[in-house]
Length: 346
Ligand code: 1HN
Image (cartoon, rainbow, N blue to C red; front, top):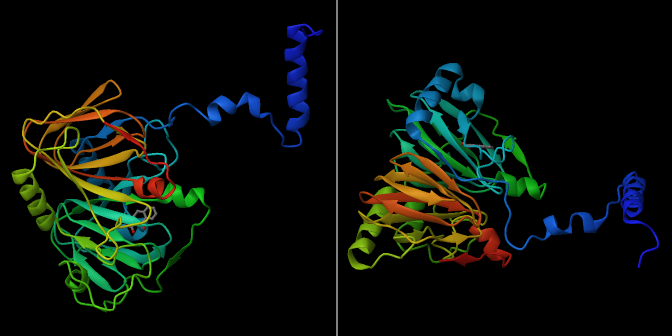
């Protein structure tokens, strides 16, 4: 039995907290429940960005600023539950980048890893460490950490792609470095397709030894991806939640293309109605083909080609397709797996 009445205890505690607070000390028992919740808590919420709404704003940004002045002309897909943080999930960044005919996005490098998933238009290129690749819708391209990269559009139409970066992860570790290349465009030292010839045909040079965890293959063309999906769909029964889902691989290691970001492609057969699924890696999706809907957290988001949506960590979601649909997605799964944190529930 306490000799002190409860009201006084509350007052005494407050006085105590104020006293120690001045010395940057704070009691664990007031925050313990929030620090170690029984299941994942995220500030992020599910959301869908309809391309029909975003496209006019992308084109408007094209009139307001050049790619050169902007450095990168991007509209960030910012999670509605996590405004002001330039993040689509708690750990990842997403944005839609526009490059107009004749424009150049100047060369630079940074420790953040990036992916491009081409949404609209053909004829722009991205250059990675001296090799250019022409972007086509559905192509998945990586810009490994600390590689020089610039983009250009010598073609005749606007080109839009989804950028996915590990910015919040690198920020968390305070490990950001960046620098500009001395000239606007880096010199082209290799012919287009060299990396693909070396690493894109289930072959690699005999003495190749990976120097990093990032894939030496930086272009995963949609033509190949689509073929693989079609064959899988022809021969396999779909997974109850995912339909026909594959992960992109680093051909030199069998691991993920990048150490911080996992990337996926899935085909939902016409009429598919998936069972609910959740995992600890929240994901950002880009719709390539088909129409359907995603049910998540009591909401229903109808999707069609070029729409983007986010499913936060440990939010059960289910996918449905009216016609055959293809979805690209990316998440922080490689990081969680490396740290033995990743869990899923079907
Ligand atoms: C970046 O370098 C690119 O190279 C795109 O296209 C988006 C967002 C934040 C920081 C660097 C690019 C970026 C970025």
